[in-house]
Image (cartoon, rainbow, N blue to C red; front, side, top):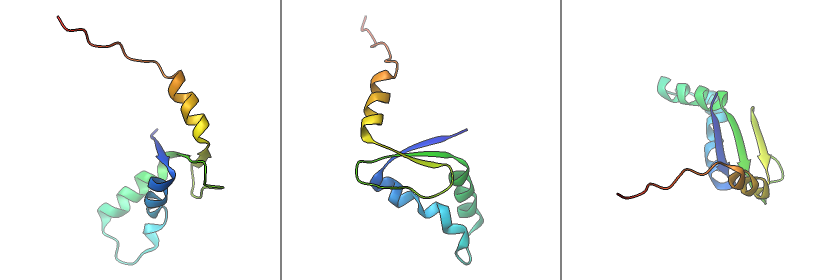
Length: 81
């Protein structure tokens, strides 16, 4: 399963993939990209969006993003020899 993480501005650009299949004469490779995008889970981090649209899409506050980043395991620094 894929999960895409977006900020508000990128999400507003990418939501195009939700409805492109309704356009006339859409090339097959565009339709495949739209199906891939629609199948993925999407999390949108924003302090200004009141709601998000589309299947498998949920909104989160930027505070939630900050706490998730803090909880993420950190990789060890590469030591020079």
